[in-house]
Image (tube, rainbow over all chains, first blue to last red; front, side):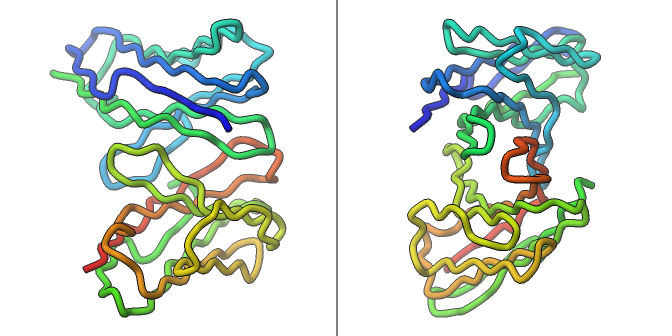
Length: 111
Length: 113
């Protein structure tokens, strides 16, 4: 089955700086890559996703890049704010099949 | 709010108890899921229901028993659990099983004593 690895496990940045979280996957058939944000006491919420026919997608301060050849994808958060502090999960799936999640990155934005 | 509601939010149960977790979605989705979230581990898919029929069971112990009476409700019945079953149990739904976007509930924090 698919194996998704996520790094780093913890990340601290100063407010206003950028944060980058990276994931790799093993199954070349995977074609859908969502990112979830989980705040304390809440369930994961989808913040951005990308499909394998696209190399980059941006939504305001959040962007995701995908390198199919290298089988890795990354989440980029620019101009970080304290409310960006949360645990972020990447996932990979072949559409219609099981999601495989990374182990999560705990992001702390220091005011 | 994601439109997926789980109750209770917290549950403490003994190893001989029987309890149930409830999930309700108001999104008109046809697929619902149970996930287990343990510290330092990836989310683990437990069960998948599509149009009220179980389509996937990832080798989950029989002490966990799901029920999907209709497309809006999903239950997880628990009995004779072990302390290692303590975790956050998350329910999710998606429009169809083939649609990848999943919406999660807030989870039930389960502690087995």
